[in-house]
Image: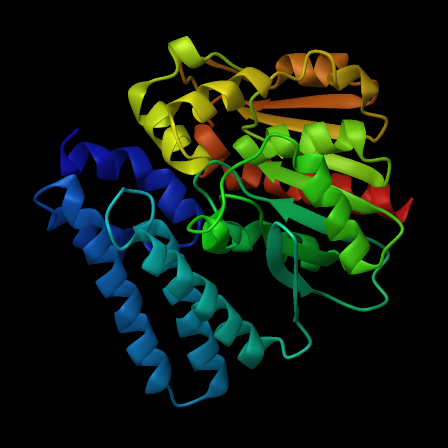
Length: 327
């Protein structure tokens, strides 16, 4: 794949994550090959760190740091030697931003997870935002903001093999164990879950097996994976994130919600994009149909993660979680 083709494929994902579209084009137009992706995005993130250092106000510094976190995360979307460094830089930049902008934000870490708890201490509910195959807590700041705007507390996390933990751990299918430890660490009686991309599978599985999940939503989450049909780029990422081909194939074999969907007791919103067609991936319609309290929202023009259609699903998702937890 050429650099221009790769940039086009990542366009709505990067801009949906909050990267400025004009700057994205300036950066990607200068790439000769995909191998130039990581260094170019890393340099752009570092430029935002320098702006933060020279900012005239704490608010400006915090905003620059949030943007740096986004650029550092997007740097990890193409494989290159500095990807672990970029993930670590994204993690640090987000932490520095929250220290300035939201001093009440709290870092919470435990076995197999780390992340930031934000929002009021007396919130009517707490939501855990779960990333996917190669995403991280820095990618979904807009989802977090939408939930915070509805008065909820939000824990945006990295789990095994994700974000800041990708260099020291691997993806695991039994994510409900991680979610259980997260709920324990947060000290709450119940949570809502929002899972994005492969995180949708993790959230749905956890909703079926962890009784403290009281509300759930998935965005572009797979109902089932078929290893033999997955396109090579997806298989390659899965191999890297699970630690080997055999482990990746085994993981894909576990990614099937057929038996678990009927066990999801919580109200569930399943969001899909009509243009999200990945070979080997069964989208979420069967999940919504089999879950006892499932609702299906298909956005015809939406792509994977629906970065090109935020207004068509994000307010509805945030309202679903807020309404369910408050009720």
